Length: 228
Image (cartoon, rainbow, N blue to C red; front, side, top):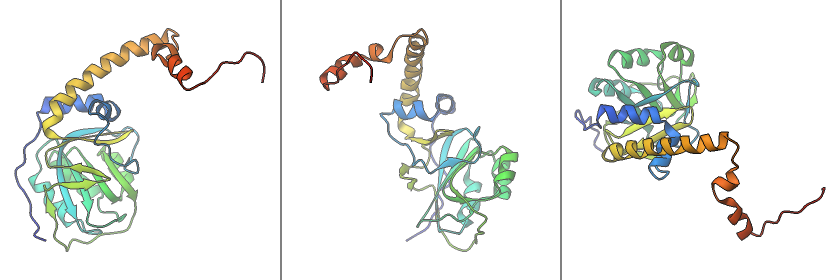
Protein backbone atom coordinates (compact mmCIF):
# COMPACT_ATOMS: atom_id res chain seq x y z
CA UNK A 1 0.00 0.00 0.00
CA UNK A 2 1.28 3.45 -0.91
CA UNK A 3 1.68 5.84 2.02
CA UNK A 4 1.00 9.54 1.59
CA UNK A 5 0.79 12.83 3.46
CA UNK A 6 -1.86 15.16 2.03
CA UNK A 7 -0.81 18.71 2.82
CA UNK A 8 -3.98 20.67 2.05
CA UNK A 9 -7.53 19.85 3.13
CA UNK A 10 -10.83 21.75 3.19
CA UNK A 11 -12.12 22.80 6.58
CA UNK A 12 -15.49 23.96 7.92
CA UNK A 13 -16.08 27.61 8.79
CA UNK A 14 -14.49 28.59 12.12
CA UNK A 15 -17.74 30.05 13.47
CA UNK A 16 -19.59 26.82 12.69
CA UNK A 17 -16.91 24.78 14.49
CA UNK A 18 -17.18 27.07 17.52
CA UNK A 19 -20.97 26.65 17.59
CA UNK A 20 -20.72 22.86 17.39
CA UNK A 21 -18.20 22.84 20.21
CA UNK A 22 -20.48 24.96 22.39
CA UNK A 23 -23.44 22.68 21.70
CA UNK A 24 -21.52 19.63 22.85
CA UNK A 25 -21.40 15.96 21.86
CA UNK A 26 -24.86 14.84 23.02
CA UNK A 27 -26.73 17.68 21.30
CA UNK A 28 -24.71 17.41 18.08
CA UNK A 29 -25.24 13.65 17.96
CA UNK A 30 -28.99 14.09 18.25
CA UNK A 31 -29.04 16.99 15.78
CA UNK A 32 -27.50 14.83 13.04
CA UNK A 33 -29.95 11.96 13.54
CA UNK A 34 -27.77 10.09 16.04
CA UNK A 35 -24.88 9.56 13.67
CA UNK A 36 -21.13 9.90 13.96
CA UNK A 37 -20.61 8.87 17.57
CA UNK A 38 -17.35 7.13 18.39
CA UNK A 39 -17.38 4.02 20.58
CA UNK A 40 -17.68 4.76 24.32
CA UNK A 41 -14.26 3.29 25.12
CA UNK A 42 -12.75 6.52 23.78
CA UNK A 43 -12.57 8.60 26.97
CA UNK A 44 -11.10 11.99 27.93
CA UNK A 45 -8.01 11.89 30.12
CA UNK A 46 -9.47 14.58 32.42
CA UNK A 47 -13.17 15.33 33.06
CA UNK A 48 -13.15 18.98 31.94
CA UNK A 49 -11.59 18.23 28.55
CA UNK A 50 -13.43 19.82 25.62
CA UNK A 51 -12.48 20.26 21.98
CA UNK A 52 -13.92 21.13 18.60
CA UNK A 53 -11.87 21.38 15.45
CA UNK A 54 -11.09 20.14 11.97
CA UNK A 55 -9.82 16.57 11.74
CA UNK A 56 -6.31 15.89 10.55
CA UNK A 57 -6.46 12.13 10.17
CA UNK A 58 -3.59 9.70 10.72
CA UNK A 59 -3.24 6.03 9.86
CA UNK A 60 -0.31 4.56 11.75
CA UNK A 61 1.25 1.22 12.49
CA UNK A 62 0.55 0.04 16.04
CA UNK A 63 3.30 0.98 18.44
CA UNK A 64 4.80 3.46 15.97
CA UNK A 65 4.20 7.21 16.28
CA UNK A 66 6.26 8.41 13.31
CA UNK A 67 3.18 9.63 11.44
CA UNK A 68 1.93 11.63 14.43
CA UNK A 69 5.11 13.69 14.24
CA UNK A 70 4.71 14.02 10.47
CA UNK A 71 1.10 15.19 10.82
CA UNK A 72 1.95 18.16 13.03
CA UNK A 73 3.75 19.80 10.10
CA UNK A 74 0.58 19.97 7.97
CA UNK A 75 -1.74 21.09 10.78
CA UNK A 76 -3.24 24.55 10.98
CA UNK A 77 -4.33 26.31 14.18
CA UNK A 78 -7.64 24.85 15.32
CA UNK A 79 -7.05 21.33 13.99
CA UNK A 80 -7.50 18.12 15.98
CA UNK A 81 -5.42 15.00 15.38
CA UNK A 82 -7.52 11.86 14.82
CA UNK A 83 -5.40 8.72 14.97
CA UNK A 84 -6.14 5.10 14.14
CA UNK A 85 -3.82 2.13 13.80
CA UNK A 86 -3.78 -0.58 11.16
CA UNK A 87 -4.46 -3.20 13.84
CA UNK A 88 -5.52 -2.97 17.47
CA UNK A 89 -3.09 -1.22 19.79
CA UNK A 90 -2.97 0.08 23.35
CA UNK A 91 0.65 1.23 23.24
CA UNK A 92 1.36 4.72 24.59
CA UNK A 93 1.79 6.45 21.23
CA UNK A 94 1.39 10.06 22.44
CA UNK A 95 2.93 11.83 25.41
CA UNK A 96 3.67 15.27 26.79
CA UNK A 97 6.49 16.10 24.34
CA UNK A 98 4.17 15.60 21.39
CA UNK A 99 1.56 17.58 23.32
CA UNK A 100 3.98 20.50 23.63
CA UNK A 101 4.75 20.29 19.91
CA UNK A 102 1.04 20.23 19.04
CA UNK A 103 0.31 23.27 21.19
CA UNK A 104 3.17 25.19 19.57
CA UNK A 105 1.47 24.66 16.19
CA UNK A 106 -2.07 25.49 17.34
CA UNK A 107 -3.38 21.91 17.44
CA UNK A 108 -6.38 21.85 19.77
CA UNK A 109 -6.38 18.21 20.86
CA UNK A 110 -6.02 14.53 20.09
CA UNK A 111 -8.43 11.64 19.54
CA UNK A 112 -6.70 8.28 19.30
CA UNK A 113 -7.95 4.72 18.98
CA UNK A 114 -4.89 3.47 20.83
CA UNK A 115 -2.98 4.33 24.00
CA UNK A 116 -1.36 7.48 25.38
CA UNK A 117 1.11 8.13 28.17
CA UNK A 118 2.16 11.06 30.42
CA UNK A 119 -1.44 11.78 31.41
CA UNK A 120 -0.46 13.95 34.37
CA UNK A 121 1.78 16.11 32.21
CA UNK A 122 -0.82 16.39 29.42
CA UNK A 123 -3.43 17.40 31.98
CA UNK A 124 -1.08 20.04 33.35
CA UNK A 125 -0.59 21.30 29.78
CA UNK A 126 -4.39 21.50 29.50
CA UNK A 127 -4.09 19.56 26.25
CA UNK A 128 -7.34 17.61 25.73
CA UNK A 129 -6.97 13.97 24.72
CA UNK A 130 -9.50 11.18 24.14
CA UNK A 131 -7.95 7.71 24.04
CA UNK A 132 -8.74 4.02 24.25
CA UNK A 133 -6.07 3.26 26.85
CA UNK A 134 -3.37 4.70 29.05
CA UNK A 135 -0.10 2.81 28.89
CA UNK A 136 3.55 3.51 29.60
CA UNK A 137 4.47 1.08 26.80
CA UNK A 138 6.90 2.93 24.57
CA UNK A 139 6.81 3.21 20.79
CA UNK A 140 9.19 3.42 17.84
CA UNK A 141 9.44 5.73 14.82
CA UNK A 142 10.23 3.36 11.97
CA UNK A 143 7.17 2.54 9.84
CA UNK A 144 5.37 4.55 7.18
CA UNK A 145 1.71 5.49 7.33
CA UNK A 146 -0.60 8.15 5.94
CA UNK A 147 -1.93 11.58 6.91
CA UNK A 148 -5.20 13.10 5.76
CA UNK A 149 -6.87 10.06 4.29
CA UNK A 150 -10.28 8.66 5.29
CA UNK A 151 -9.98 6.56 8.47
CA UNK A 152 -12.26 4.68 10.83
CA UNK A 153 -11.59 5.72 14.42
CA UNK A 154 -13.41 3.88 17.23
CA UNK A 155 -16.08 2.77 14.77
CA UNK A 156 -16.74 6.19 13.21
CA UNK A 157 -15.74 7.21 9.69
CA UNK A 158 -13.63 10.37 9.72
CA UNK A 159 -12.64 12.23 6.58
CA UNK A 160 -9.96 14.91 6.61
CA UNK A 161 -11.56 18.26 7.46
CA UNK A 162 -14.60 16.79 9.19
CA UNK A 163 -15.49 18.49 12.46
CA UNK A 164 -14.77 16.47 15.58
CA UNK A 165 -16.28 17.44 18.93
CA UNK A 166 -15.17 15.95 22.23
CA UNK A 167 -16.29 16.41 25.82
CA UNK A 168 -17.14 14.30 28.89
CA UNK A 169 -19.81 12.45 26.87
CA UNK A 170 -17.31 11.15 24.29
CA UNK A 171 -16.53 12.14 20.69
CA UNK A 172 -18.80 12.80 17.72
CA UNK A 173 -17.87 13.39 14.06
CA UNK A 174 -19.74 15.81 11.79
CA UNK A 175 -19.04 15.56 8.06
CA UNK A 176 -17.61 18.88 6.89
CA UNK A 177 -20.35 19.42 4.31
CA UNK A 178 -23.04 18.93 6.98
CA UNK A 179 -21.45 21.14 9.61
CA UNK A 180 -23.41 24.36 9.10
CA UNK A 181 -26.77 22.57 8.95
CA UNK A 182 -26.03 20.44 12.01
CA UNK A 183 -25.04 23.58 13.92
CA UNK A 184 -28.36 25.20 12.95
CA UNK A 185 -30.37 22.14 13.97
CA UNK A 186 -28.42 21.87 17.20
CA UNK A 187 -29.25 25.43 18.21
CA UNK A 188 -32.95 24.79 17.48
CA UNK A 189 -32.75 21.68 19.66
CA UNK A 190 -31.21 23.61 22.54
CA UNK A 191 -33.98 26.22 22.38
CA UNK A 192 -36.65 23.50 22.36
CA UNK A 193 -35.03 21.68 25.28
CA UNK A 194 -34.99 24.85 27.36
CA UNK A 195 -38.78 25.08 27.04
CA UNK A 196 -39.05 21.41 28.06
CA UNK A 197 -36.66 21.94 30.96
CA UNK A 198 -38.73 24.83 32.30
CA UNK A 199 -41.97 22.84 32.13
CA UNK A 200 -40.37 19.90 33.94
CA UNK A 201 -38.88 22.29 36.50
CA UNK A 202 -42.40 23.59 37.15
CA UNK A 203 -43.49 20.07 38.04
CA UNK A 204 -45.13 18.84 34.85
CA UNK A 205 -44.69 15.08 34.50
CA UNK A 206 -42.84 13.65 31.55
CA UNK A 207 -45.75 11.22 31.18
CA UNK A 208 -47.99 14.14 30.30
CA UNK A 209 -45.52 16.38 28.51
CA UNK A 210 -44.37 13.63 26.15
CA UNK A 211 -47.84 12.09 25.78
CA UNK A 212 -46.70 8.80 27.26
CA UNK A 213 -49.94 7.84 28.99
CA UNK A 214 -51.33 6.72 25.64
CA UNK A 215 -48.22 4.62 25.08
CA UNK A 216 -48.69 2.90 28.47
CA UNK A 217 -52.29 2.12 27.56
CA UNK A 218 -51.24 0.83 24.15
CA UNK A 219 -48.77 -1.52 25.83
CA UNK A 220 -51.41 -2.78 28.23
CA UNK A 221 -49.89 -1.26 31.36
CA UNK A 222 -52.58 -0.89 34.04
CA UNK A 223 -52.71 1.23 37.19
CA UNK A 224 -53.85 -0.72 40.27
CA UNK A 225 -54.92 0.93 43.52
CA UNK A 226 -53.81 -0.71 46.74
CA UNK A 227 -50.70 -1.75 48.56
CA UNK A 228 -48.09 -4.21 47.35
